[in-house]
Length: 345
Image (tube, rainbow, N blue to C red):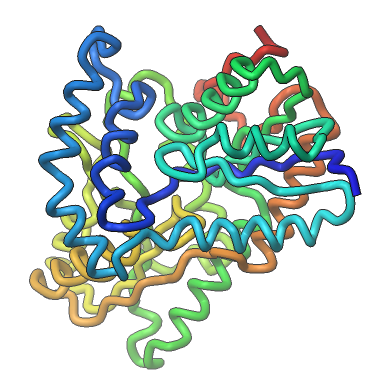
């Protein structure tokens, strides 16, 4: 059956082996949307090689601890397969990773071979940010232009409060809390840990922080706003000022307040990867124990939860019904950054 609609699932990607760690890091740090430098086009590649070479040994150790590779491609493939089945005939899903294989060019080549008639760009980043979702969609448009592909592109912009996403997170939080003994469950603090960004991006109008706050508020409304909760940020990558508090600092503060149990929610991630399986489950967990947290519970990412897949399918269908990018969380004063495309100039 001919492919009428190509749904391109956009994600960051991860190394498939320990040998892939250094090139993966290079791809991240050489992206000017991720790391913006003055006159970066002159020297960012050189700096990215130095950073990747320096950080690769430690990063390899981290990936070794979670099986020697990133699980993100396998999990994204599972999401893609379930989404394709949910959408039905005429739809086919393709995976475009920003920082490692399969790259965007491979997805575009495949959808061209399949005779796709239109494209839906679906970032697997619910919260919009220049550093990830905008960068990834911009790459899709660059590849399409380079290959002179004239297909219409329908873009899903952001979906931080999409009901299916919120329900999937609420279900996982409820399931984690249910494992905690009754006498401690009511006192358990929910700690939302989102990927951090440089503060300069937020100061420049990036809507990511506002979107994360909206996701947290929507999830808390589902699980009960009377439960204590806080928001923190992980994965600082440069020496510049990043969003605060860090997840480690938040845990230290909670321990100082007498909190004994925490349920940590990686609220900006849809799939498990090194920042959940190593950073949260090992590095930050050890830190939590060292500062006085007695019981550390980590809420799993939604992965391929049926409610999330239903939400993604609904986003695809709604994006096809309009020409402008589908934006479900436009905030006054925090406009979602747009991506130039061949169709929009």
